Image (cartoon, rainbow, N blue to C red; front, side, top):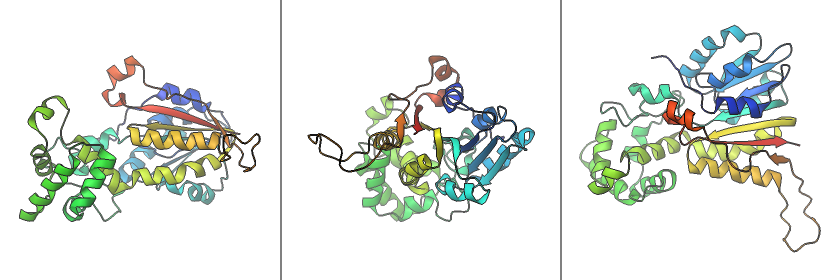
Length: 312
């Protein structure tokens, strides 16, 4: 199957990045290069695009798709948390724009062998963004303690039945190792009241999401990298981040606000004495959402939110 990810909020991203022909831009979650193609076609002269992705399939597909712009594009297989090192390795210090699209790609969801989907019963419990990683979702399901399963399903899946789901998983794996999406989904169904399953969407969605986030350390990577990415921007450069669930959005919003107003002085102080200076401003005080038309044409865009920060 082709690695074809329909880019979400494409027009909005291009507008907010304000792509300059001779600018330097980083796509930290390259995927199928949907956003990157639009950036690359606007570059001329000294303009550069650096695409980063830890998924080997994405790197191969994106490199092929960006072939027409190869004079302006460098594709690197890595995690965006290594962005500084990646840029330094190719002689770049600062960028004029950085983009993260934190959604799981259509390819990853639609190819059963990748193990991200709960809709294919025979799909393995894999979920690795980077297949060089040894631990898989199957390891988490079968080897995490019941308490740790409860924690991640509660915190990352925000599932009110997290305790019962963890209990059912722990009981089922005593009988035999849980290996497929279908096996895990049936266990989850047994832990959630049937009347809730009728109205609450797919019962396995939140648990699969929580396991994927834990396995790939998605929230930790985002939380630990945002400030550094702002530091990698030139003056007037912009960081554009598309999130797809509330936990990601909360992290982005919090970091952007702290970088806009880092002062830690008590509110009743007449002047700032902590010495912390703003690093920039939030361009989008409310997140940019997909249009009704885009949501209609691309159902996976429905939960997308775009936030933008501009460096001083």
